[in-house]
Image 1: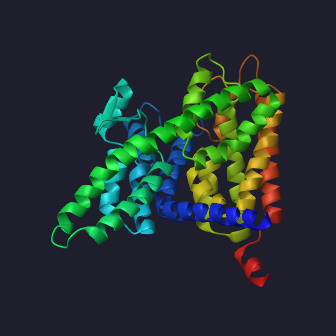
Image 2: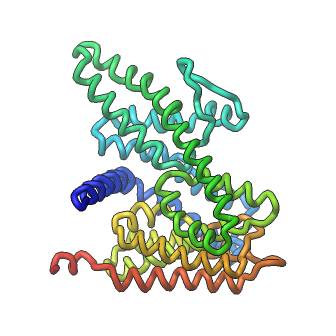
Length: 364
């Protein structure tokens, strides 16, 4: 039994390390646009009020920041190509087709599509990370098989053509439906957690890191919109605010131990900007202990928020300033702040006490 568990642990570790290898090259993009979002929040009406949200400058910088995440399937496809040893530009096409304006329009209109008689899942891939990694991983087997089997004089023509043609149904008809199925199950789970009271709030906050790692952020947003249709969200929005702030403090504790500048930037981006990807994928996923602490701290913070019946009445940034959405007739920003302090303090202290920096690891 012990041997089996060790093998499972190795397999899980290999999956995580491969994902990290695919994601780390894109961190400059994530940190750059994440810090741009932080700068906009600070310069905007919520803090310094130096720039109006209705100004052209604010609008342009906002869509530039959004573009950094929206086109993530392309960036991830290119970095995954290096990991799985396939052509980078062919990989970029696989990522780009998920964001084709024509496909996005069909999804928004609810039009049913098929390719080679196979139904295509009507789903959005903007901001997605995992879909591209899986797609390029699968393409690597097709690509290397064709590379070996195709005659040399036809390879320059047929290798890119067949790779793309084969990957179209594989990506749209296999990876897409899997994502839709998992997303629907997540929405079902969130609706059930909503009825569990404080325990449900705690569990919700604890699993958000894994929802993000699994590339199910779209389903998370769908559930949030569903809950918010009543004008009040009792579980999901504030759980995301807690998660981002706790992640920021966990990452800050890692920075104080390792003193890496990119770790500091990721911490600020998570807590203030409400953008978790740089800290989660680039920093915390590399440290299973920190990831566990993030989840545990989230549970206790979420439990307290649920116990005190903290609710959100609007949607805003998932960063620190998202706490203002809890101001309302049946909610309390004071209890929201206490929940945040509980989670951030637990995350920071436990991470700082348990994390060993590189020099300590070498000495051990």
